[in-house]
Image (tube, rainbow, N blue to C red; front, side, top):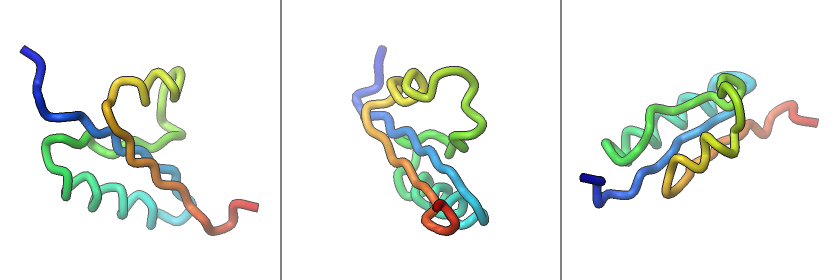
Length: 67
């Protein structure tokens, strides 16, 4: 039986670790509906396929030193 609660994928990229910290805080607020935060650089295979597993996404990116 499928859950009636939407699933939320939490993804992040980080330069200094701050975005990762924020991802964990956001995931905690959403509770069981949210995934454990996933670092984009650690995704094996297609990022699009990984995103497609969820009903909603929260994606955090660093703004420092990104050119």
